[in-house]
Amino acid sequence: MPARANGVVDSLEYGIDSTMDAASRLTLLDVEFLSISMEEALHLIGGVIKENSKECVSFINADCLNISSKDEEYRSILNSQSLVLPDGAGISLACRLMGKRLKANLNGTDLLPELCEVARSEGFTVFLLGAAPGVAARMQRNLTDTYPGLKIVGERHGYFDHDDDSNTVIDQINALKPNIVLVAFGAPRQEKWIHKYHQQIDSNILVGVGGLFDFYSGDKKRAPLWMRKSGVEWMYRLYLEPGRLWRRYIIGNPLFMLRMLRWKKSLQRS
Ligand code: UDP
Image 1: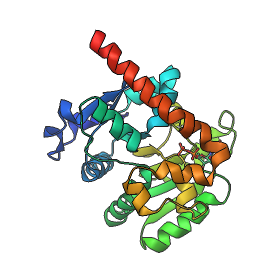
Image 2: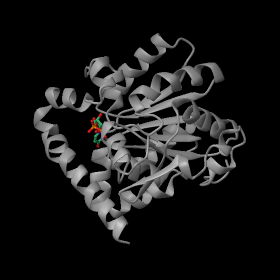
Image 3: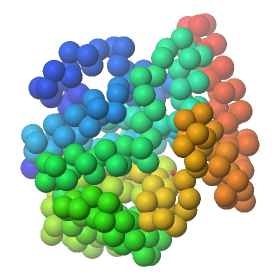
């Protein structure tokens, strides 16, 4: 497999690159990402697989950018990737503050069904890595029931020793050579793991998907559609897990906007 092609967005040939101009690349809090439609994102991912190339995909939300403001390693990993996709109302609001409009909110939870459809019709294989023991297996069952013919070739939970046992996990993945590996360790752990090991992993697309498996396994309920559409899915998550998430949302959301205002001012000064 060729080494990871960092400039895939520029190099793919399916017409999309002509629209991948500066307007498709936005920057917030010094992290660059793509403002593209769901269809374009799927097209890019499909193109990487068909070229037998390799790309790492990350989603960023307000919490991720709060973390990346303080975590230089995470920030530079995000900036080394071609496929960083915006997730959530916070990012959309921040774009508006900068006078830009986000083409689409591309969170992993909405992208997954579309990705499954593409994987099924193109015959792309998928490996699920992450979440608590049993969760990925339940998700695998649910997805193969919903998308008959979808090839989920393997799964493994995410509570192994990431320092000492990653090579064993990678051997398991490489024996199956999946086109797509979904990695659900939460941000930034998953991005750091993917960055550290992507060259060793025999797969085309490595995606960090956060808490996605908990939803698709049926273990956690997703917010009703009207809440998702109104950009307040975070309120539902907070309602379900206040103890774990209050800091992320109650403190994190205003902090993110404050950071944005400061960042905007610093740009205007320079
Ligand atoms: N997780 C994991 N291994 C770890 C730590 C966490 O597999 O060492 C999983 C955890 O079980 C959960 C996901 O990572 O499924 C993190 O979910 P969270 O909602 O925090 O992620 P977010 O979507 O907010 O990034």
